[in-house]
Amino acid sequence: MTAPSPRLDDRPTRTARSLVAAFVRFVVCGGGVGLASSGVLVLLSGSMPMMVANAIVTVVSTVIATELHSRVSFRSDRRGWGVHLQSGLTVAVSYAFTTGALLVLHAVHSSPSALLEQGVYLSASALAGVGRFALLRVVVFAQSAAPAKDAALGRASVAMAA
Image (cartoon, rainbow, N blue to C red; front, side, top):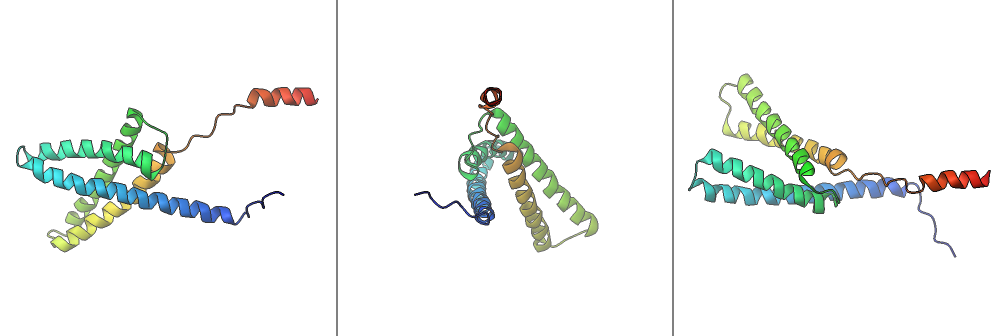
């Protein structure tokens, strides 16, 4: 007795579900690292200049978040410094995006309220996060297509069949 074949309309649901699950894992991992980083930043800022502490925390947290995203968020087997460099570039783009949003706000509104400033920053951060998720999923942690192991066999099979 053969198992029933999956219906074609089940695939989009599974794909959408796996995409949502990966995004939730991405938010939890990234948010967890972000919260931990803010605590470490407070601890370090007492013993060194804030700019130095922020640079150290940013680099270390990006490395940790990249490992978590690789293993947990995207369940990828891609590892190494190339992955960390690509991920770091997405962080740099996100930083430029959020900074640009705040610069535009200050160009348009000379003295925005703290609430408006935070609203713009958080909105830009959310958009940057969605963009970063997409780049990490599609570019950095994209599952490579399985190598065509049967290419030589395929030719031989065709030759034998002829």
